[in-house]
Length: 182
Image (cartoon, rainbow, N blue to C red; front, top):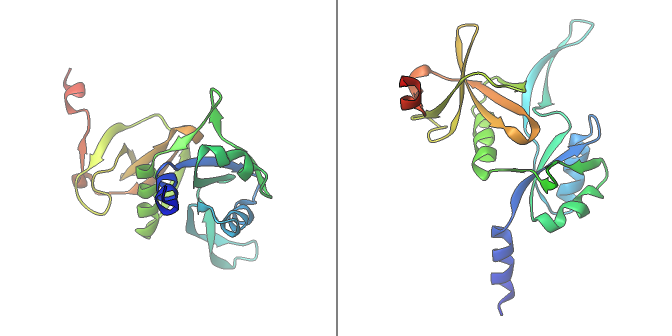
């Protein structure tokens, strides 16, 4: 039995799991997990912050406060929970919550577009659409119109949040076109 083929097979069985961190400790948890060799994703965006003395500064802000994503195997979850500043993993019905690879990749692409991102907790409005052109082509999500802007969102059901980005309406098509006609 070849050891290298066993390791590559184990890597294919990994999933993206969601972990809950101590308040404002996401960066410390990320650093600790990276030192231990885990594949970690902490979505961050640049935000303009105005301080009390009217000083303005662009800072890195965590997109989903107190959440961090780790690409690992299910058998590693309890070991990861022993990491400093990691509180627990998110689970529902006794099973660990997972985020699809495509969803993680979509969020990474949204961040790389250098546009303003917004996160809306507990989002339920909007119709399901698919992006047909541009760097997010092929991704499904929800469409929302807010202050005369069209926004596209990727829904993270496990943490009950949706991340939005501005998009042109001609870049999307309805996913359930026939369902609306009924």
